[in-house]
Every structure is written in structure tokens, then in C-alpha cells.
Length: 427
Image 1 (cartoon, rainbow, N blue to C red):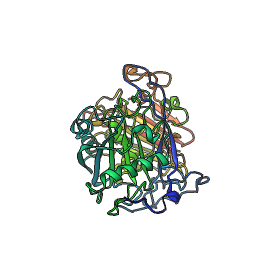
Image 2: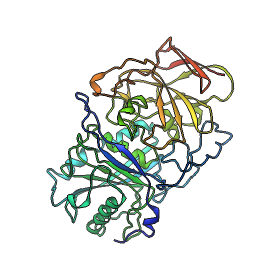
Image 3: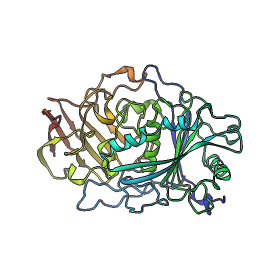
Image 4: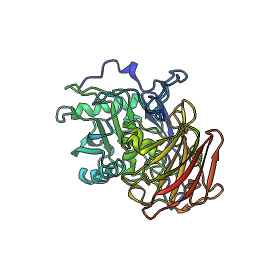
């Protein structure tokens, strides 16, 4: 094993995150703080202005340089193991390893730990992507014993790049000779659940992307790694969330004030609260990842009133969203949600509206959902403190006007197939 050349100059920026997750039957546990790697260097200065979207895709706002995991579309077409993010269409190849420590030996078999996540993660991505992403995990079904105790690495709330690289390089010391790391788009490390505090005290699961922590003897760069600790309330979806970062998606909760998350995206996207009732992704994310075709998006740039029919995001086919850009870094999105597929536990169904900003860092609120029923909550059993947006979808007869985006819409109704009709006016 050798250290990757130039690692010190390639350190990824840190996106802080309050890591408490809620049980459906109890209030949240204590909040924890951890680092999520990004491709933005710390102290990189204010964001630059993004490039204009292509003329043929005026709603595909470009990613803003200098913004951690910007919600915009990337200008890069790079693919492969050394690209900044993993491919999100076609086959993604994930190497999945399991590790334990001298002071935290695994309490049960590697096969049992692996079964906590697979095939569930593969099935989640198949459903979310409408079959566009074939998630292939190659497991090494034995625990790799790390050479030092868990306590020696300093893994705790907010652990940083130095601790990450120390652990990855130690992992290679004991695994590089027996495991071929070449040809994988990302690496999952499933840590024995008895290493570190319980997940309801401090969620340590993290993804690092944008820089290589180490390079194997055969030249593979370990630059997209998701590490899963403990037993999370979200079950297998914690890995779906963490791998979302490897595909370029940001955190949608508030890193600086976790309770504020309930006024941002709530439980409506796995990149927000991955233990929430609504476990799928926003249409904006699915479009960015290449799972929705341009023809499934209505991009409204001209003034006027039009009626649209929206098929629920969870179902294959049909128009999925109406998007209204209202500046170089902002769009207003309208989509339909149903209690099927990855959203089978959804609290409410209807027309969901939200604002996206491409100039806001991961963990700072790049997406905010419009509450169709302000002042009320729903399905309070799902969480002790994050339920106000559970009844956010609009239903037949409701209207909404957004003065900043200069858009208004009315929900006309729902047909027998489950599609929603809406009338949208852009002023």
C-alpha cells in the first residue's frame, strides 16, 4: 500500500451534519456531528456564478462552482472510477467490505451484517431509478480485522480527513494483498455495529468523495467511500442515503440547526431524513441523475396558463414534474407523490411543491418544501419532532401562489389511474 500522491493538496471540504435520527415511536436521540466529504476545498471563497444552462434545456440549471454538492447539473461528463462522482445510470459496481477491530470484534457473522443492506439497497435503487441504475455489490463476506483498536482512530462526532485516511490506509495494509480494488465505482465499508456509540446517540455514517484517501498497490484510488456504523433507525436506507452522496446528491437537512430540517425538506427525500415515511427522491434529483428523460419534465419559461397531468414520481412513465426557473440559481418544482414503491409508507398523497437553489451548500437547505397545510402536522408517530411537512402535498381544490417565482398553480383533481391534473400560471 502507498499513500496517494498529493493527498494533502486534495483534501475535500467538510460539510457538517447533525446526525440524530428519529425512531417512529419516540423523540429523537441526542444530536451528533459528523463530516461528509465533498469536492469543494475548505476556504475556497464565495461561489462563482454558474454557466448558463443549455438553450435546449433551460430548466437544467448548472452546478455553481464552489458550492458543496451543488443541486445544479454538472458540466462534467467524466465517468469511471476516478471521476468525482459514481455513474448513476447503467451498472454501478460497488465493492462492499466488512471490518471489525481488536477492541470491537464482530458479534455475528459477516453474512448477517451484509444481509442488513443487501439486496435491499439494490432493490431501492432499482425502484427509485425505474430500472435505469443496476446496483451491483460485490461483497467480501468475512470481517477484515483492522490492525489497531477502534479507539485509536479518533472516530467520533465530526471526525475529519486525517482520521479517515488513517483508517483507510490501515485497511489497505491488511486487505490490499488479498482484495483487488480495481474496476469499482465506489466502496462500501460496513463497520461492525458494536464499534462506537449506538446510532441513536451519535450517527457516524459518512461518505467521502472528491479526493483519494489512499491508492492500492495496483493503482486503484479510494476516492468514493461510504462507511456505515452502528444500527441506524433507517435500516438499509442509511446506505442508500450515503451512496446518494457518491452519485453527487447533497444533504437536505440543516447541518447547523437540525431541528430546522422540519421546515426544509422534511421527510420527503431520503437525502433529507432517510428514516422518514417518504423514502424516495424528489423528481429534481431523479432528473439530475438521469433517471427521468427531458420529455418527462415540463419546463415552463414563458408567461401564460397551462394544464398539466402529472404521474406520481414513484411510478414508471408519464410526465413527472413542472419546473419553473426564476433566476440563474433557482427553480420552483411541482410534482405528484403517491404511497407506492419506495414511498409505500407515505403519510399523504398529492401534489408536492418545492424550491431548489443551486447556490446553497449541502447541509444548508438547498431544497425547501412548500407546506400545503401550514400549521398542522400528520402521522406524528413517525417522529418525535419532524412531522409538520408530512401533510405538505396539495390536494384537489387547493391553490398556491409564489410571488418570488411569479408562479401560481391550482390542483384540479386526480383521475382513476392516479395522475393529478394541475393548472399552472407563470406571470
